[in-house]
Structure formats: structure tokens, C-alpha cells
Length: 76
Image (cartoon, rainbow, N blue to C red):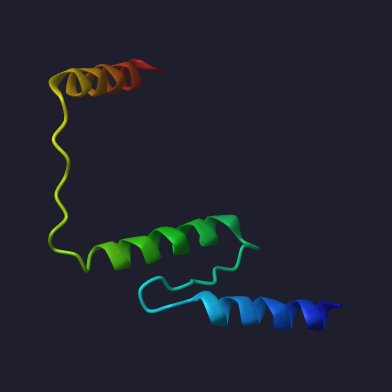
């Protein structure tokens, strides 16, 4: 059934990948490399945008983040 599976797989990718929402095939037999490839793909795509703005954080959230950072730095 492998050949049939491969044909269905190829058809699914071919018929659902678009320019606006493409599929990226990432081999998963090497987890560190797969994770790198996912991160690089995201990074490369996101850096094409020049209008992304970081959200404004509430002061309470900023204080919590600073507290978490302090806790992490003090752990040994």
C-alpha cells in the first residue's frame, strides 16, 4: 500500500498548497535538524514583512516578566 499512500500524500499536498498558504515538507528523521528547518522557514518568511509591530504590554505583564527573568537567573 506504500505506493498508494505516497500518491495520496502527494495529491493532498499538491491540491492544498497555495502561494498564500504553502506547505513546507520537513523531514523528521533528525529532530534537531527538523526543528532548525521549521525555525529557519518561519524566520525567512517573517523577515519579509516590514510592518510587524510588537504589541504593547501592560505594566503588570512587564513586571511579571522581569520577575520570571530574575528567578531564572538566580537558579543554579
